[in-house]
Image (cartoon, rainbow, N blue to C red; front, side, top):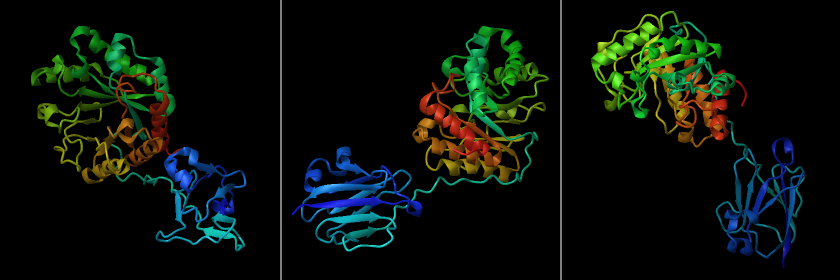
Length: 387
């Protein structure tokens, strides 16, 4: 004989959960896609209650309950391990504490809350920052100087980066992959370097100058002699600029990016990294040459742990560490929660970068949608704001 089944779902402190989703298994629902069919799920009312009618004798054999912020509860009523026998007739299933139980009630345990992502708490800095300044939250803005030279750099993009809470941008001075080289600009390439860095300052931003980007190398840095000339001119052109950091090369630990970094001296005007020791402590990296260590974490696995490894680089090297390239949003499914964790973990070494992708920040356009949500979450995590 068909019967009715009531389900009431309580949360913390016995507060009813509205719009909890409940799947009550019946033969008809099983043949109509089971729990994979959204139409087979019912929702609780503002009192946390729902009533399912006309359930065949011997059913339900399964009950699933889902609610935002809780793990799913799956309870068997037939012969499954841990099954609970159902009394005959109309019954109520109570999920969570019910007070007094009746003979027509079945008591199930409360839903288990999903814990918030772990939040590493930045300790007091053990290694004082080399440049002695405040914590720095950076944004991948590789094409910014190129676009500045071409007159296409978006003021709106600069404004957005600053308003999101970023205080630095990471900029390539040449980029063989997109054909960006200094020759077409002549002397204007060099004279615009202080103009560009002053432009960054007007938005409250500093700029990390990556002197030689990855292969294929641009024609202006095609060999060691040209590389030395290019770097020397970059350093000369920035004389008197204070809102800068230097990274000689990008990911020089990779064979395809290798050049003879020992042919270059460490600058004295800006804190600098050779770029050779990236991934130190993870993939071996290279020698710890200069005052600053740049670190690129793996772009899969436990991103928070990878970012904390950047802090380990600070501890083991005794050097100021920039976590320059953690995963891009596409690497972690555009999950703002992970972006927040990455920002928070980066803040442990007080240096972190939101690593955007081409089309989502690298080429300096205004962010929208999921990419914007991740950038905002990273900055909030870095500065310790609530999500």
